[in-house]
Amino acid sequence: PTSMAMGPFPPAFKLLPLGDSITDGGLKTRSYRYHLHQLLQQEQHRVEWVGSMHGVYDRRQGRNATRGVLLANEADWPLEAQRHEGHWGWTSQQLLRGNVRQPQRGRLSMWLHRQNDSQLPDVVLLHVGTNDLTKDVIKMGGSVAATAAHVRGILRRIC
Image 1 (cartoon, rainbow, N blue to C red):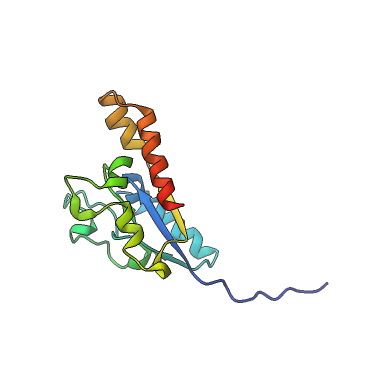
Image 2 (cartoon, rainbow, N blue to C red):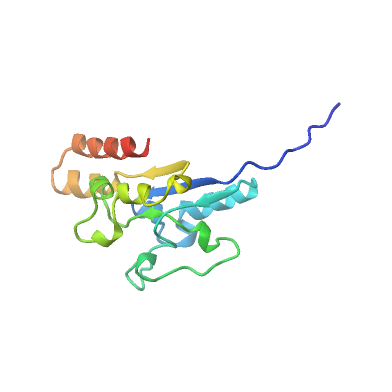
């Protein structure tokens, strides 16, 4: 039998977690980003996490890292692996066009194009629609078709 020598690992890929509070996580151990980071590390994948935000929403402070609250640089979840675009309570329309109550946080086109081409994400993890359904459709009688149109708009800009 012949053995296959492992070549060097491929260069790091850029990963943008994009979405609402589920993307943010709320707590380190509840954040899928934390668990995904652990799995990617175990498999020795090199990932560059991208996004304008760090950490998770801090309920005690009532704010996220964009307002100055960061999680500590922890051995199992370093700050550079905590970057994301998870916006607590935002709908797909707000991700696409911005939130009029929080304009300083930006919108999808800004997050994707503020970087030069070498910094654009290679992979986008998209989790949207929960707030659309609970806020717009169920509580306000909005349309699922409108939510689908907003999600299609996000996908067009990503792809």
